Length: 180
Image (tube, rainbow, N blue to C red; front, side, top):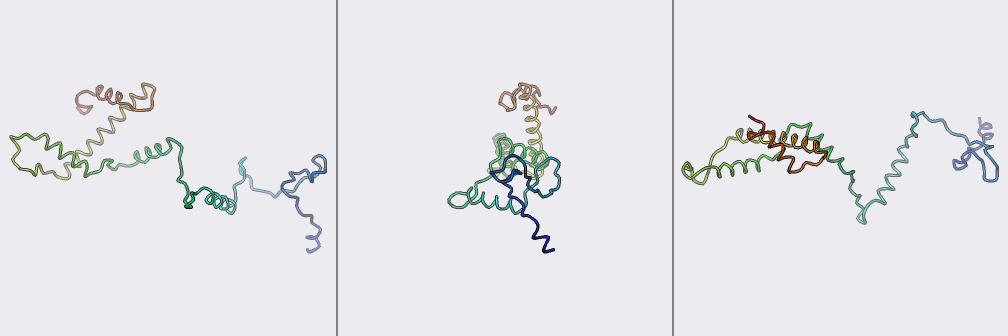
């Protein structure tokens, strides 16, 4: 075994590309290549060692003088599409509950007249389920309105919703906003 190991020639360097040393002419010598698993036409994947070296080198050069990495910057529209998919998947309410409840109470106080205002400064009392029902209906109305406005913008060969799209959608819906 030891004799066979001594008889083997060392493999040529990978920089020779099969042409031997610089003074030889033509492709007379070929370098030996190790067999690799076929990846269907794609280049072989990097090993974990080389990718970690690249990552370490990137981190050492990419940071500021404080050593912090720069924040990942996505292409325009990528984050928007991700948020669209996220909100389409969820059924949660999108408006915060307390700010919405404050707006509802403020509008209700504005609607009250002096003749039927007998409760002093406290105003009306609201059940939490009533405010929740108003919020559900409000969000459903707004989502439907933006869907219609988006269709109006697409019809005008645009992708950006403008004020006139919302106005057109409301005008087409009628006085009850498509609810009646």
